[in-house]
Length: 98
Image (cartoon, rainbow, N blue to C red; front, side):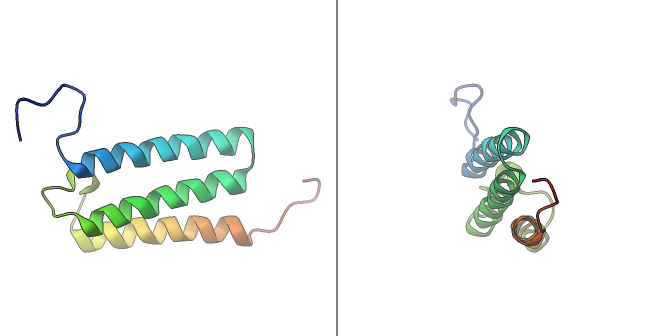
């Protein structure tokens, strides 16, 4: 890692992907609170799938903050939760009065 980097900038590609996923998660939460919970939950799930894709594509060093455990665990957990959130947003029926 270089000491020449400006403060506040991630030092790895994974760190930049992590910040993108964080922004997507914030957008998803805003959508849940203000627009449609289905859309917001689907956006959150998409963010997790993006994180899983980044974890698969990057080496352990480049993963930055996307790396929590081993690569296999991280990818299975992120992709599984992301897919589950999207599927649940699709299949949960509307409640009366919506």
